[in-house]
Every structure is written in structure tokens, then in C-alpha cells.
Image (tube, rainbow, N blue to C red; front, side, top):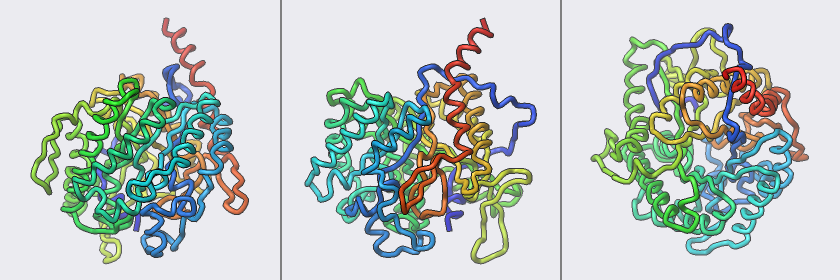
Length: 457
């Protein structure tokens, strides 16, 4: 059950709420150079049909029950083949950036065997985006990697980090003439939680000590990749960062230790550990001997923030759902087991700003199949973003998740995050009514800044 992944993610927070009735959602201001975009990952938009050498394709072949309804990605929304068409959708939205992943299994389907056609494909993607004045941002690892790497133990073994560094070096050498923005690893804590504690992602293990080793190695891998890429041609001119899933949660009944104690434990090990690593260089999990990586505080040019909501956890006396995800009275639930909470987005931006580096919101969005909450979600969250910028956080860009409905990992096809819906039979893309709020906000962002400056002078 997906609520379990919500249960075990960070952190304990207060339940302070803003009085939205007194807030003017149109009073928002953004830098002129701000990047407005959407985010995706290759496996989610192209599927096992295009990427058969990925560990997720093997996972699906087994008919793993962790995927809702036994659904499979198949060819997904044919993102690999329709990138030119989809670039026009970005242009239609008025966006000027796109975050996507370069799939490792496409580049290196067998160990040491590199696919030049796949590399050329990504060159074409980048050139197409830039021809439409859309800035590409590349993610090197977004939950997916080659089956051969999985069979070697993936990030369970420190020595395997060298394979990832080799892949990153190759991609950077081929694409850094076109791309200045790079994310090394997407959401290490989610990879660890889902793949090594809950068993809902490959490799489907459930052991907290192995999970801690994997998280340690993934953070170490980020530092290694950062140092390698910065030493290469174009390295100094590129901005390289990591992407962290920032999800705090609180007990519905703060007095109840059965609800509160898991919050503390997993906050420490899956949230504080990451933030402290980049502040101090120390990996301080409760489950492993401390390791110091002195280069960690200087291993990122920006910090990528993925934020959706907080998790509110309540206890019930049921063997199947001992702890469940819920919300406080008056809050609006999304189609995921959490409510909209723009106040938490603001706080996450403030916290990430304390790392002293620029921040990119690399993911934020809502699952809303009925499309009856998307508009208000976008307007509230982008108000919170504007307020954080006004309060001094150096936010450089915002990437909505996602452009088009796609395969949502263990959730299968049940969650509709896309600005555009997709008929998977015809592959027709159609803009949702609620998505127009994003288009309108982007269209007026720069003029609004100018009006603010005039009014303030």
C-alpha cells in the first residue's frame, strides 16, 4: 500500500496554516530570469517497451503485486518518439525549461557496451528544446538503471559507484555543450524507502540496515559524480546539484507515541541525514557507523527540492492499516494519501535556502483525476513560492510534475499528475482546464515583476 511510503518519510512539523481568505493569490512576483518548466523521467514516459534493459522492466515482467492492479508501463506515452511533439506542448504552455532524465539502460544496455544511437537521441532532444528557447535540465539517475547494474547489487556496494561515475562522465562529455543544468540523483531517500524498506520498488527488499548502506552510498555517489564532472571540460560552467524529496509529517494526535515515534526515527534517518550531510559532510544515520565525506558541503551548485505535501499520520486498530495517512479537518485531499499544504512548501523553501546555495523546485504537482483541485493547488503553491522568494530564498526555477500523465511507478496508471491528459490508445494529448492557471501565471510573471518594481520605487 502506498500510504506506507508516506508513513515513513520525514519529518515532524507544526500544523500552522495561513488564512487563505485574506491572501491575494494574484500578488506574486518572480525574477525575470526565472525558469518555468515541467519535469519527467524517461522510464515513466517511455516504458519497458522502449527500455527493456532497465531493472524496472524486469520488475514488471515478474508481475510484481506492488504495482497497483498489476499494471505495466508498456510503451507509456511514447515520450522517446514524441519528444518533438511534446516540446511544442511546453511552448504552448509558455514554459522555458524542461527537466528530463537520460536513461542509463538506454546508453549502456550491457556492461561496457555503449549505444551511440541513444546518445544521439538525447543530443536531438536537447537541440530540439533549445530551438524552442527551452532550457534543458538533465537528471542522471531517476529511480531507473540497467539490469546488469542491479544484478551487481547496484548501490548496495560502494565499489559499484564507479559504474555510475563512468556513465555520468560519458553523458556529460557528450551533452555538456548543450546542457548547463545537471541533477545527479533524484530522491535517494525515496529509492531507499521504496526499494529497501517497503519493497515496492526493485529490488523489493525490506531491511533498514541495508537501506542505510544504500542511502550512504548514493550520497557518496553524488559527491563522486560532482567532483568528476566539475573537473571535465564545461564543468566549471555547468551547474550541478542533487534532488531531495522533502516530505515532513506529523502525528494526527501529537500526544500519541505510537504515531509520533516513527516520525522521529524516520525523520532522523531519511531526512535529517541528507540535510546534515550537505551541511557538515557527516553521514549520521542511527543505523550505521558515522562516515565523514569532507567534500560534501561543497558538492552542489544548487539544491533540487521535490515537494508535494506533508503527511499526517493517524493510528487505527486494524492489522492491515495500523497507521494510516490522513489529513486535518478542513484540508483538501489530493488523489494521493495527502492533502494540499502550500504552507509546508513555503517552509521547505526556507529550510533549503539555509544551505546557502540556489534552489530549484525540481518537482511539485498534484494528482487530480477529476481536475477539480488543480487550479487552486497551482495558485496557492506558486503564491507560497513567490512569498519565499520575497523573504530572501534564492529560488531559480520551478518545474511542475508533470507535463503529461504517465506511468507512476508502484501506483501504475492510477494517478493523474499531468498538465495534459493522454489517450493511450491514440496518444492524443489534451490540456486540462485546471492546468491553464499555470499557463496564465507564467504569462504574467515578468510584467508583474516590472509593475512591482515601479510601485516600489
